[in-house]
Length: 266
Image (cartoon, rainbow, N blue to C red; front, side):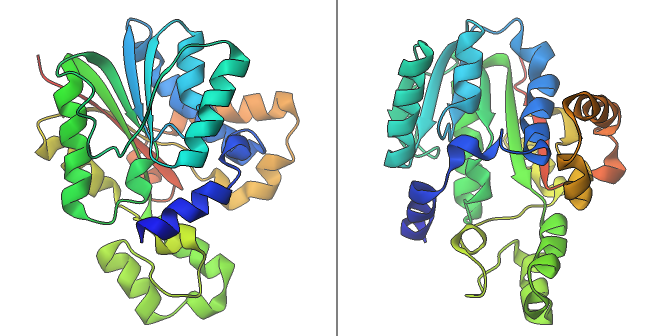
């Protein structure tokens, strides 16, 4: 399964994903906005699953000391190239988020986990990632955990193909968070799709206190063509509206991505 995952991201244009259209821009803009009050006083930040560095480079440009951890070699190479082109220094490690032994205990103000949980299908390994984040965080430090909602994915499967609307496919997704049918691409077959309650429970089980929980995309993906057609001025107006409502609990499961922000006790 990991080989299929690695192959998928080795050939996927992750570099453009967060900037190529409005419905993906809103994911980045919302995440940055929701983390702002936590990142302003921070000095050291680690990103698990840094990909090509969209977040890591952004925070390095803001003056933070950034450690970027990425598993896929092709993405690590792109990350190194992007950092060099942008003239920023990153501490880059090719490694799995389940083992960041090279980062000292109690050393980081913030840990970002904005992608790894999308593809960790084993519950023990998901817990290990949170344990590692807890270990390296300073007391009172912040972890931000992104997930993909299995409720959104159910609708996405129906939109992709009527052939995926079966008791077997939807039942498996509902019960396990997995989509193992060969009728979907590797992103889905290697994916793990969570529920909002589950992710809150995951961070709480490791001793972290939930500070915020937001619907990163809101319901924007359901009107994707309309959001993508907005002018820049209209997009900014929509973004401001979205930021006013994204923490409403009623939106959490329907959003493509969710974001849980939690704090390590002092």
